Image (tube, rainbow, N blue to C red):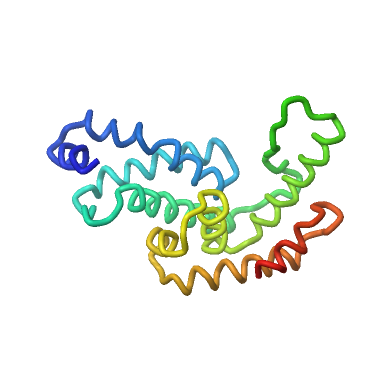
Length: 190
């Protein structure tokens, strides 16, 4: 990895292309989980790689390149969420449809999963951006508190606090009928 970074610093575009190829899925997934829109996630991913390329000289080789890159992507997504909140939001716009896949689910099961997914996405969308980033990194990427703190440039205790508060906020707003068992799970982990 460091060889590619070093070569990219020397102007080798193929080396940077290897870095993009290696990390494009991780960056896109993070952006999508934070922004809930494929187009925005693609734009955010491209912007994250552009910013990484322009700031490659600031990369500290003692840190993980992936962590550094995800920090750039996460910060960009948080900024984008903040800007988005200042714009007019339509309540008529449909929420992204994220469903769990099974081999051949029954139509009723598909509807239930879609409703649950929409409810969870809606609740996550109401979290402050820094809480949402911590939740996504912890529960979608399974990063440790230390890794999340490194990515979000804060302390481990701040991450634990954000996750605790995020779980409480989610538990306060979840409808136990829509996502059975989730309310209890959130309170047990809070």
